[in-house]
Length: 144
Image 1: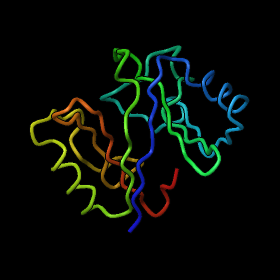
Image 2: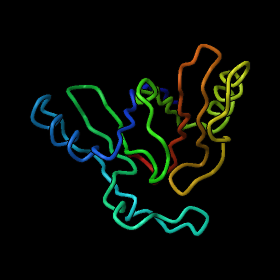
Image 3: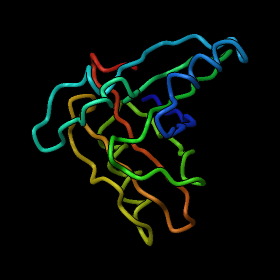
């Protein structure tokens, strides 16, 4: 089993700029970057014109550490104080479910744990202490 806690920054439309900044400032290497326009289309969540270049997910390697970041989904509010989350990454769906269920006790679900195009089990929750977590399960071809 793998288990990692990765800082995840949620930006307000300036993730590309942040990536370029961290490349220079921290010698970061871009391991993965995908815009909203590169994602599979979903009629339930159409991407507004002019926002397809926003970053839906990126992973940077800084030394021995990874940093993940994205822009907010177009049309979603961005609130200072919630832009840093902890991404709990595992390769076991059962562990992801266990962590998700434990963290939601007394907390608030942001996104139910579910299969997505990028993960066999992904969800988000704010625990009872106000800490935001993303639960990400790696799939065989889904290493970001």
